Amino acid sequence: MKVITASSLVLLFALVFLATHSSSQQIDPLLPICKTVGGGSMYVGIDFCLSALGSDKRSHSTQGYRDLSIIAVDLLTANVTSTAAKIDGLLQKGGGDATTTTIKCLQSCQALYKDIAERQPACAAAVKKGSFKEAQASLQKSASAAKECEAGFGKSRVASPLTVEDDDAFKLAKLADGLLDYAA
Image (cartoon, rainbow, N blue to C red; front, top):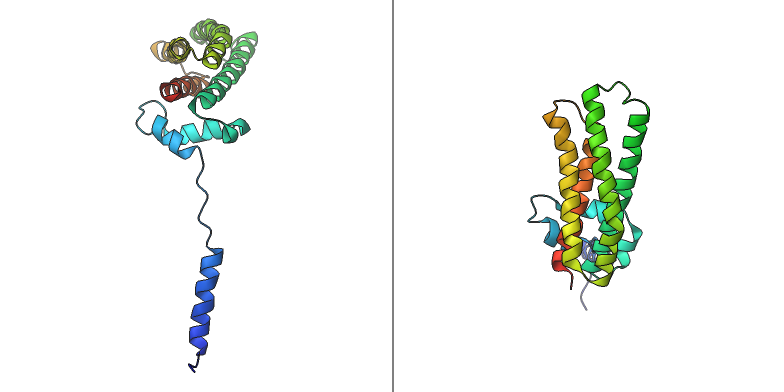
């Protein structure tokens, strides 16, 4: 009969403990999708993809790229709505401490965001009915409009109060567009 030493018992218990308690970290189910869409993108990174899609509880029970693109379109719609409200608020205050140039830039952005907002229902409908090329054309226009808004401040050499919002709108449009590239 073998004698089990105390050190052997400790080692045995340690191995059993590690085997039963070692929890492999759960991998975010969005990670492979975001690696596919954002990994090689010069517009949308993996972190932005995970953060954006992860902010919507629907993303964890989706059926694939098409469903995620609907979520991204919805997130873009929410961004556009809140950005338009911010622009309206800034303009109602007379631009705050804004110069005439800043006010003109805000007015230009107001028109651009109005156009994006008007396109969003048709874009969402196109995704839902499987007209991906139509939706992608709309999303590309939206991304360009967000860039154009931000570029207007740069060309006028004034600080933009919309940098974060414009960047998010651009990336959300590109994310939705990229997701549609893989939708079936």
